[in-house]
Image 1: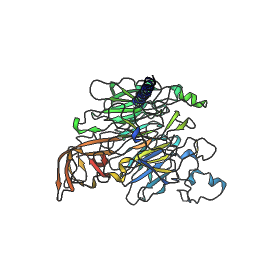
Image 2 (image 1 turned 90 degrees about the vertical axis):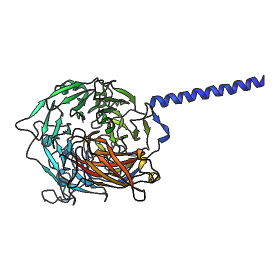
Image 3 (image 1 turned 60 degrees about the vertical axis):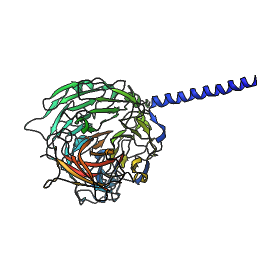
Image 4 (image 1 turned 135 degrees about the vertical axis):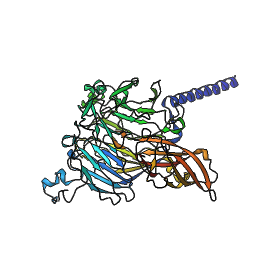
Length: 568
């Protein structure tokens, strides 16, 4: 009898253990999180005060970072000794609150870990931008005096360059608009903005102005603050533009002013664009399918009613869902999955490996001053090629909230630069739930750890064809690098990455392209590798300009090198 009771007890324990394991498996399946990598990566504080909120941020090909805010935010954290006009800034009460006695843009020198003040005159509040083929940051729109302005920042080696403003203006005021580089040489497509249901080109051809886009009228929701501002725009490899606003999306032929496709609505309620503010990336383009498979991913956003609720001081839980859809071909369906937690106001970055980093943001509310709570402190790593429910990993947490008006960008050494965060109307440091954040951080992904040094390709050099100053479309270039003798050549990839203009949770013009190697061989004692790599076939796949070139071995990237893609 005693043995029978003992056996029953053991059996009950086994049953309970099996049930628990099944529950854990179920949770893991629903959440889709790899628990083994929750502590991957590390954080490092770089500066206590950048002086200016990183509402907007962009990497230059001289390894500096342009950071800027809005001129109408009042005094920033970087006080000037003199106004840019030359007049001294005194300690008088008037000068202490004069915005002209404070910088509203800085250039961050990565190697020196220093910032210098830049002069920016018209208001860049919630503006947009793109990087031209010569490395110039062309910046469009903003607020008030800046709503129709076009600005240029051309980086220079001596770091003495500054902003300039064009005499030409946009056709429409563009506040919360999106800008993307077109395949044509240095031509930009500028779309949307508050009360701007149209698009235009920069520069203009002849007497053209702006063109109405009915899609923006249809996706506008006045009860939710719009929910179609800062639309997600991606250049497809067929030369058309994927435009996503609120919950809907189209494929647009800008040359003919024609909608080529209307895609299914992304499942679930809520909104994805400002002020719902989810994020989006175009997944890496790959030579193995001749760059013909283009897939877009949209993650997070705000629940239906979040904008109205936030204005009443109530903060609704954000969206957990992500959707992926192939926009080429003839069959289109959103394939849905869930992030570990709800998220909005976050950035989605393509890492040199081709994986996606989801960083910054909040769990409740929506965009706007004071409209969000519960900062998202844990980044996620998303591996697009993994099986469903095995794609998300939770990474090491930060202690600094990065919510509204924060940004993140990828650096040449594979680190992620994170800055900004301001949920307040002006620079406010006390008596608010989330003070204005001027600290600058770097997130070091797991692949930067020293234990991977033996796998890391080193001493990467790029050699263009004789007489060329860049890579022509369909042309070849030579790459030399060091790699251990026993490394498998089929585990080597050659990737190029277009550094974006980052603002309001969307990295404009971000793209990663996996290139084809034609020949690869070992040299000398076997440590050196030499490869002939084929450039992208057209400007539809990779518009002309500066890119970060990375050699990746088994998921471990080299330090990236700048290369330039040029028109023939």
